[in-house]
Image: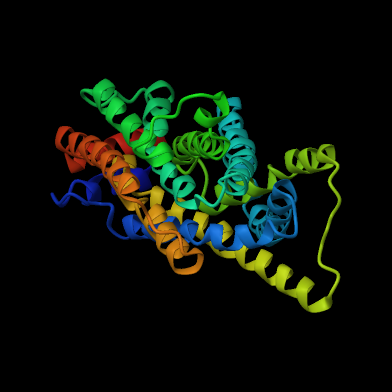
Length: 336
C-alpha cells in the first residue's frame, strides 16, 4: 500500500454520517446518472434517421476523437496491466459501452412507445452489480437476498406488464423491449463492478477513454455485418440538426456523464452509489413526460417503489455492518 492510500485511509476514518466520505463523489454520480436520463431524448430522435448500431458507432467515434489525446497522455498507466485488468476493460468497453448501449437503443426502438418501462427497468442494475461483486470481488451477499430479489422481480413485473396477466402467445409474455432493457441493465450493472475495480488501477479519465476507444472495433464489425444503408437526411438543415443532435448526445449523456460518474465512483461505495443513480430514471421519466407526453402509471409507481425499497434496504444493511473507517479500508484493498 502506497503513501497516498495510507493518507486516504486516515482521512476516511473521520465522520459518521450515512454519506461519510462519499461527499462530492456522491453528487458527481447524481450528475452523471441524471445526464443518462436525458439520453433517450436525443436517441429517439436519431432513430428516425439511422439504425441503432449506426447511432452507437457514430457516438463512439465522436467520443473516441475527444478522448484520444487523454489516453495518449496517460498511456504510461497501461504498462503492467495483467489479464484480469484487460478482461475488465474489455467487459467495460464491449459489454458496458458497445453492446449495452446497442441493447438500450434497440429497447427504445421496440418499446412501442412505452419508454418509461425501458427507463425504469434500468434500476435493476445494482442487483446485477451486487451478484457480480459477490463472485468477482468476494463481497458477501446482503442478508435475505433471496426474498429481496423476489420483491425486486415483482417490481420488474409491474414495470413491464402492470396489473395484467400475460397469457396466450409467447410473444405477449416475452416483450422484446423489456428483454433488451434487462440485458442492458445486466451489462451496465456488471460494468459498475468492473469500473469500480479499474478506477483503483487507472485514472478515471483513462478508464473512460478506454471504455469508448476499445469498443470501436466491435461496433465497426456489428455495423458492417448489419449491412444497412446510411439513410441520412438529404437537406442541409436537416443534416445539420441530426449532426448537432448526435454531437450533443455523445458529449453530454455520453462522455460528460461517465467522466462525472467514474470520478464519483472512485470515492463512493457501491451501496451509496445505488441511491445516487436514482436520478437516472427520475430525470428520464420527467423528460419523457415533458417532451413525449407519457405519464407514469400507478403500476409503474408501485413497481419502482418495490425496486427502490430493495436497494434502500440493501444499502442500509451494508452501511450498518461496515463503519466508515472500515469501508475505506475495503476500498483501499480494491485499489492496492
